[in-house]
Length: 389
Image (cartoon, rainbow, N blue to C red; front, side, top):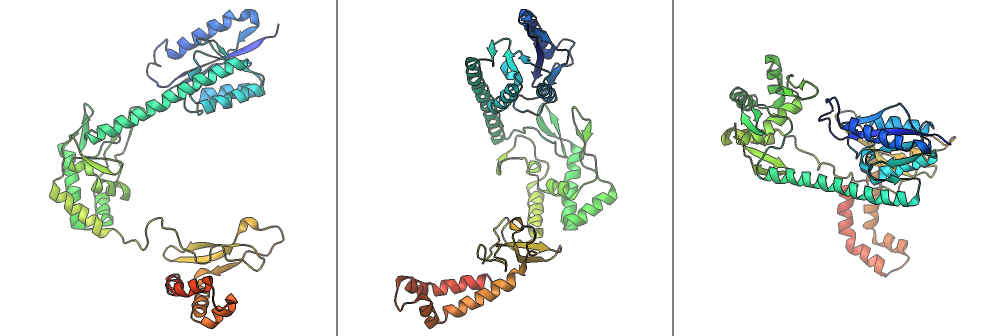
């Protein structure tokens, strides 16, 4: 009789109750061990190694217990994976397919003790695929419900968690002002109006040892209680929670909590922030126009692409040879200053557009739809050329 080495895998999505002497993972393992014992006549044998994941979601493969189990499968140390339910192994159909592929590569199989599924048969695999499709669907629907609930709650002005802002504490899941901290927030905002810039105020707060709010965390102690940084100070000055507002996806709603900054002070601070904001020379993320993109080639016939460099204060633009097309023995990549090349090309084109006889010679005709269209568009073309110089 061939011995089948069986590994039990257990998982629980949260850490709740894992501190108990007999927890959910133990209950799953006990059921799996009993099933393996019932298959002793088939040569099934439990291996002593434990593969447990407490507090890990079934929607991810990044689980230490699962990784160790699959590594032992790859090493040929496991013949059968035994779980209490299919969704203990994974809730993702795509991940399940990957796991089955690894099992097949080593001739291993998978069994769910409460659902009587076995991947050694084609019908078993079909049934498992259907079941996992529903498990994945349920997980996605649950996620949508949670997101919808958060959105609806924020529209009603409810605070839905996250770092507690300086000036507040959480009482029964609601933001409640802390008088001493609230006064510190108002003082910081008034001092910003006096200092007239964030860097100046930041230097003052650091010199005086003013600290951020201490955030108490359930599992890793605490964070915060450190000197303000530029980002944290900007966040405080712009945080609409202080005006009694809740923001969700760019929309502002009246909050259920009490405002700790009056409208006049808030408006003055926001006005000063807008005035101090540096003017953008061009829109954020606007594509950089390159007049000759796709038209430039180096002396070796290799395409050239627009790129840029910077010394911290000034931006320099170039056309350079594509490095990914370079082969061993090729000449060194060529680089041209973009402004010089484009200015030269633009000036030549503008001169050509002003020479009607030259255009007719190039077109090879005295009349023609293309030539007539070019004549009609000359003014527009000249403007665009000048814009790119």
